[in-house]
Image (tube, rainbow, N blue to C red):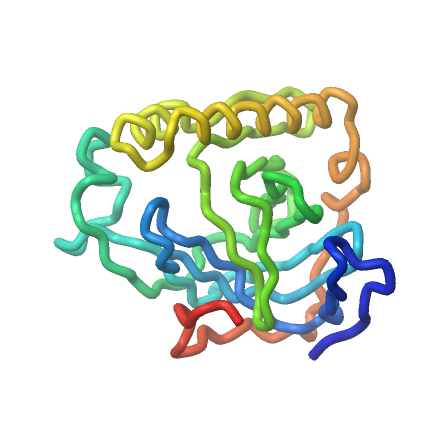
Length: 225
């Protein structure tokens, strides 16, 4: 499954890279719980010392939280959304696929969205913990606050209300929240300078039609090893 080894590893450890076409898991742990509550099987597009790029295909089986009474999370009022119990739900990814790009040690990933006819819609900067690699994928923790970037290079903050509610509910400390906001400002500097990955032409990328839709393993929540 591994494609290469970084001969100049960060932190004194060798990093094994996946090959294009390998299938891995892109997971998020619950804020404050440490338990995996989001899992997305994806196909590796590129993996090297500079960038991990993966493709989440339409109709991929994914795990996401739902309210314990069976309702989608977004149907719960924000004031109680994070305080009421959640349970995992396995669903099919709807709509067009998503290309996800992440640079090592960066506190965000950049997602590209298209319409079903491959008309490019936007980039989405997902603020999160830097990805932690393990044998079968990558893990992170979502930080609620996000940024949308449009083809005309305009941008705006997203989910400010969720970010504020997460702090009010004790899901992140004031110091962590300040770090998240600082990471967002760093991302905005990249956007304004039109740095990587925005300048790199990923909006013209297309998946290999031979790639199958990845399966969701039964042990999708297993500890990272």
